[in-house]
Amino acid sequence: MRKQFSYLIALLALSLFPLMANAQIVGQSPALFTAKNNGYEIGIGKLPVEDGNTLGGLEMRGWVTDGFYHPAVEIRSVVTGPVQNDGFPANLLFSTGYPALTSRMAITAGGNVGIGTELPDYNLHVVGNTHTTGNFFGRIHFDDNGSADNAPNTYSDEAYFELHQLSGFGAAPASTTTAGGLLTLAPGGASNDHQLFFADDGIFHRRETSGAGSWSNPWAKLLSSADINGTQNRVAKFTSPNTLGDSQIWDDGARIGIRTNAPDPAFDVDIKGNTKADGGLTVSNNAFVGAALAVGTTTIPAGYRLAVDGNVICEELRVLLSPMWPDYVFEKDYHLMPLEEVETRIKEQGHLPGVPSAKVIEEAGLPVGEITANQQEKIEEAFLHLIELNKQMKQLQEENEQLKARLEKLEGKGK
Figure 1 (tube, rainbow, N blue to C red):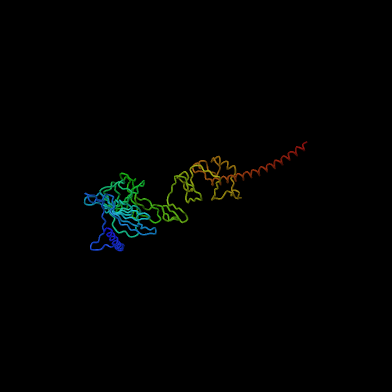
Figure 2: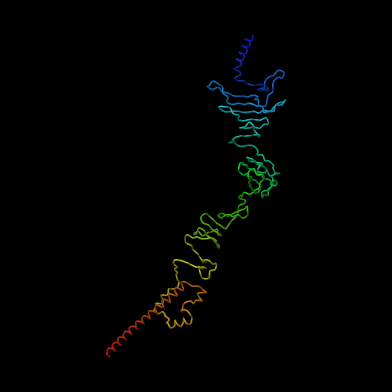
């Protein structure tokens, strides 16, 4: 009888096998159940599940050439405990992988979804990179944290965006807004924590050492076009600690003008106004002074182009005189003052006639060009006197020779 029953069971299994290959769950309330217990004990009955038990799983396999069905994906549930009289929490795990299955996603009893982790701490917890190629639809959550200025040590390896009241900062930005968006970036490690406060009147920034107990560095406003006023080609300067405006420097990329917006096109730099250099000044090419130049002094006497207070040294000095060089002394109609008159003038004036006195030189200085021409005139006059004296000397010598000859002749007759 038992043997016939076994045949009957085998025949029933063979008849049902084609139906199981295409199983369907149909009806008003179709459902598929798996029921887990830990065995049966007499006097106790079925033993309850325990923390860590696998409640059941659905594994999808495929036949390959080695003669076996190999798993490709799996869905299973594990008891996460604690097990109570009326139930227990469990998670749902999704596994894929080749050559071995690996848990990829988990849904906890509390509804947290983890990708890359079986223990998600958030509604969606991703361990690994996240990439979105399509549009993001949803809302950004703003936390109203206006009652406290959270220190850097409250942020760790995160970026946090919140709505923040201006009055909630320990040291508030110089803003007139009531509340704004606060973006906190905490890279972690040795990197500083940074905050951006998006106010109605601008964006403010501050930073602090990672993990510090408070924000001690001041806020700085990020300048925008609303804070910057200027003129094209004018070099900007700070008109206040947070604003920029025009300076006195004009630069169009070809030439620079100081105190002018129309520099002379013949020069690379054009300065309108006085210029002072407290340090050294080196000119490697030609230098042109249009008016007067003072060295070692700030006073330039009227009528002069160069004033030097101190010694001047050079290898050669060339003076170009406007008046005629005194070759006129050699003209036939030139009046040469007789030496007797020169002597009289020297006795009366104490210096050569036509030459500045020592007092005049002391008071007015020595005009190099003028005095050189003056001295040349006296040298040429002196040569004219020497020439005349030489003629007179030769005449006296000739007369002396004649007298000497006559005297010798007379003496010879007397003998």
